[in-house]
Amino acid sequence: MERDAIDEMLSEVAAELPKVDTRGLAVGARLLLLGKLVEKRLDDCLEPYGIQLWGFDVLASLRRSGTPFAQTPTELMGTCFLTSGAVTNRVNRLEKIGLVQRRSDPDDRRSVKVVLTEAGRELVEKAFHDRVEGMRAVFKGLQEDETETLAQLLRKLLLTFDTLENRA
Image (cartoon, rainbow, N blue to C red):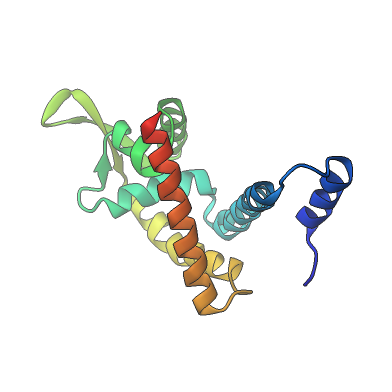
């Protein structure tokens, strides 16, 4: 089997710290590296649309929510896995370029909704196909059943992580 950059790092750890069990590190380091590589690939796919993954995620969340394509900042925190400050920052930046607007919530005047503009809806719908294709290209080295197995294993890991977080 071919060796990757993580194998090299693990060899160095084994030479210097032979009693350390690096199985978790082998998975975690690869997940972190793959995360960076996938984000770069998706940013490249979104470049023709003048947006990066951080903005696309917010726009896609609003689009997925259905008509009227609006969510509260708290809802965006949940759907985009962001902190309050990150939502504010991203909404500010997207609002500045005309892709979203803040509007008073008609049901609760103390609350605000982030609403996808027509320009934002058009952009996210055009870019969505390229984003999906970019993700498909990332996994082209895997067979279909391997992709499904990987998805199941990652789901299991995420659910385990969620359980640990909820106990804290």
